[in-house]
Length: 125
Image (tube, rainbow, N blue to C red):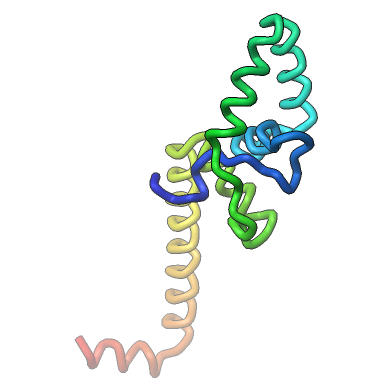
């Protein structure tokens, strides 16, 4: 997965301080409020050493490109890919199987109700 859509970025557009929490929320698909709440909890639980990790992440992570996703549906799709690539691949295969089944049904219906087309197909064989 070398796509830029599968990387962790700082999201300065939706962020409050450095955009680290907003970037983590975008990456995981969790609401930003819960990520910020967990960060505050970690700050107090680790007696402030989580602040150092936050600042390091703020300086190391790249800014999120402005036009990374076309729309909200594409953003949700890539969040699912990052959470479980195997499940997403299974869902895509299932969708293609369903499309293939429906296309075969349409072809069967059209060919069976069109004797001229059936004769022309048989002549080509």
